[in-house]
Image (cartoon, rainbow, N blue to C red; front, side, top):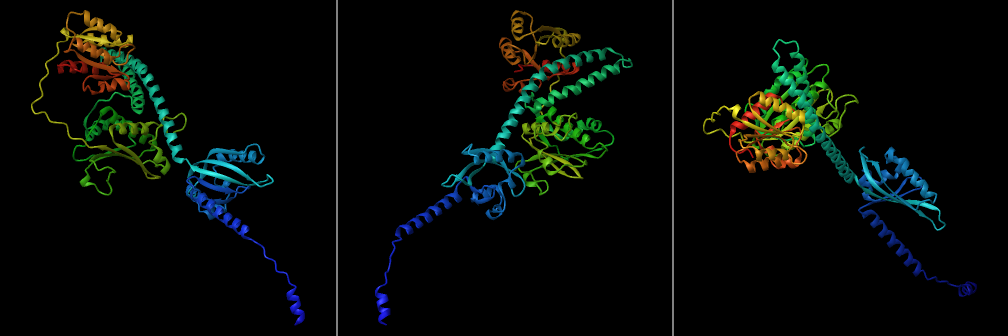
Length: 536
C-alpha cells in the first residue's frame, strides 16, 4: 500500500488547452456549412468536378438544368452528358488550364438532358490547386441559356425573312413588269387570231406559263408580308367551290378531292387571292406527298363558343371558321409535323421545289389573324387545321343596285404613268384599242405638268405605285388636289409598306396587281370610271 501511495504521489497530470482548436473546428464547420448553403442555393448552377471529369458535388440548380439527381450525376462524367459537337472544344480548354496556359475559361455548350433533349448552358470553369500548386479539382458555374438561344435563333430567322422580303420586293417589281409585257402582248395577239388558227394554242400556252410564273413573286411577297392586300368579307365555302376545278386539275385524276362544307356560310375577312394561295399550296403539297395516288379532303365548320365540342374545341373563345385539309399520304414524324410551318424548313431534296408552301400559308393565315397547325400520323396521313376569326356577313343593300351607265370611251381621257417604257406602251395600246384617249407619262413629275397644261378634262389617273422620284401615291394626292373629281387606279408588281399604310390597299376597286391581263385591265378601268366620285 505504501508503494502504491508513493507511486500516486509521484504521478504528473498534464492539461492541454484546446479552446483555440475547438474554435477553429467550429469556424471551419460553420464556414463549410455556409459554403454548402451558398453552393446549393445559388441561382447559377455550381459544381465541383474531378480532374477526370467525374461530378463530385453539384447544386440543386445543376440537377434542375440537367434533369438528373445528384446521385445520378455522381456516377457520370461531364463528358457523358456533353453534346459531341461541343466536347472537343471543352476538353481543349481543360488541357490548357491543366498545363497552366490559362487560369479559367468560359464557353457556350450543350448538355443532354436526362429526357434526351439538348440544353444550352453558359459554362465558366476555374481550377483549384493545393498549397504546392498541384491541380485538385475544377469548380464550374453553369447557367441555363436555352431560352436566350431560342430568342437569338428567332431573331436570326427574322433577319433572314427580312432579307428574303427585300429580295422578293426588288425581284417582284422587275419580274412582274417583264411578265406584264409577255402576258399583255400575248393577250393582244390571241385576240387577233381566229379560234382555229394554228398559232392560237401556242400563244395560249405562253399566257398560261406567265400566269404560273406570276404566282412565284406573289408567294414571296405574301411570305415576306409585303403584298398589297385587298381584304373583303368572304364566304370560305364559296372560295373553295370556286377553286374546286383548279384544285382537281392540280392534284390529278389519281387523287379525288372530297368537299365537306358547313351548311351555313363561313364569313371571314381576308384577301381572296391570299386565301386562294393557301388552298393551292396545300393541294400542291398533297399532290407531291401522294405520288402513287390517295385522297384529298377539304372540310369547313363554323364553331361558336357555346357550341364547341371536345373534338372541335379551339384555343380561343371567339367564334371561328375551321378549315381542314387532309390527305392520305404516309404522314410525318412528330418533329417534322411541329416544324413544317416554320419558314425555310423543308424536307425536300436539293433540286426539288423550294418547300415554302406551308410556310407561306402560315404567313398568310397569320396576317388574317388566324392560326395554322399540322397534325400527322405516320402511315395514315396529314391534316392541316386552319382557324380563322368568324366575321359578320356583308351588309345587304337596302335598295336595288344602281345601274351603271355605259362609259363613253371616245370622250374619256386617261392619264397613264409608268416608268417602264414597254409596260407603258402595252397598256396604252390596249386602252386606245378600246377607244380611250390616253396621255402617257414616264414619271410623276411629267404627269403633274400634263395635268396642269391640259385644258380638256382628264377622267382617270392610271399610275404605277413604285416609281423613282414621286411614287404613285404622292402623285395621286397632288393630282386630286388639282382635280377632286379625278378617278385613280393604281397598278404595281410590288408595293412597299409605307405606300400600303398610306391607303393603297384600302381602295376596293382601285388596285391592279401585275401581271394582269388586258381583259382584267379594261374591266377594272371601266369599274373605276363607272363608280363616280373621288377615288381617294
